[in-house]
Image (cartoon, rainbow, N blue to C red):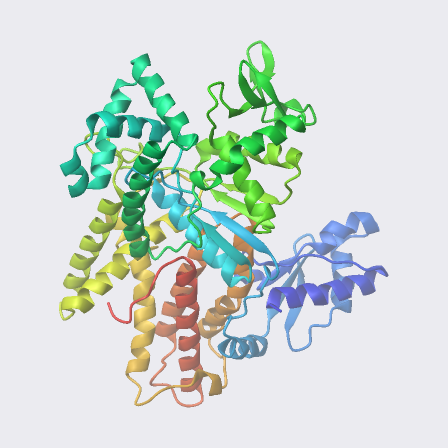
Length: 580
């Protein structure tokens, strides 16, 4: 049980005694430490119902509060109840965390299965900087959910089917350069795709591309062979990027995996009356159950509300994203027994997912479906980040640049690092910088991609946090022998010691809240605050020069801080080096 949960439990007992009936109330961390560590507005919420003065009711509650050995309580403002944790209680909590492999984090997801659908690039196309957000946010949420006890299934729902393959197959048959394909497969596939895309204004070519797609979806052997070749070379290239990012998937069930289910899905929607024919296409329309403003199948135009259907089979017999996504939901619910399905996909797909979740619910596929949307990465001009030629910036190039810049910064700071060790540290720092720059942002925020800010050793950056961990571990390299933190007694006398422990015990309180609104930036902010608290502690409280038992107590706090920093950064997908 976390400190916050312990306070809520004791507050509930006090409320029950005060009101004469079972009652609960929430406790939150105090926004201003001058007023305490935690606070509750329970008296203010209940005062009107009880027809009492809020401060008077707060005093009654405090009179029934049993806080022995844990905290003191007082009243502030119009009736807030503020709690101050006793230093001895913080010391006891720190000692317990030192012996806890989970660092006080409760297993809130135990017994629940969550599918995290993230990254999902289109094959036969290079990943670009825009893929950073889905890939890194999704990976972090999967790591956090797994640490919280969820059974996590990470699924890379790659775009390996659909319209672009009709164009690629047409280009393969008419414009392919075999030598170029051997030399750089992805580049050649992109070239032929762009060539066909430039010609698609010609209705004859566009119709030919559509015909190739229909043949592919119908199982034409020649088209399937071309498609499989594209998949093979694309997956090999994608895997190299994922390996560099240390991103892992349990499955790569792309759109093609569900191809055999599409016809049956459409037929079932027709049989159940969820979909109907319209101009030759099969569409899902509004069922009239929702208010018009909340109905994803209606849109308001100048002349009023009109239909905004989701097409699940085109007039030419082809299927769309909506069809394969419905089949995907069916598989995840029926086969994987998913309780939650999270889609980490950009804001522009908001309407698609609203329609998808509504249609799935009408189909009887129940579960917690979440569209975890995010904003855009911008260049210095505050427009979408592009190359000078107007193309998307390649993700491979971004990662290479990050590592190269990190290598230069490390060489300037520590020229003694050489060879393979220097290269590995540069890789860790460069990749970590890219990840933290992403995860420290609110996911719905557009942000400007800045190399200098990202790789700074001071400020809100991954290198600063990695250096903080390195600094802590360097303390232990100065010891004559190994140090066992579990044997140390914790003594908290200085304000900086108390504040450090205050943050350490909050790790278990903060981590579960990240999934409330899928905000890994809360964890990023936490590890920054913890690192700052450690640096203040280290400046104010001598460690190695302190006398016993204070020396061992402070060494134990250093060890606990390094473990918490390493765990927190690891949940963001960021490694920590031993030296920098």
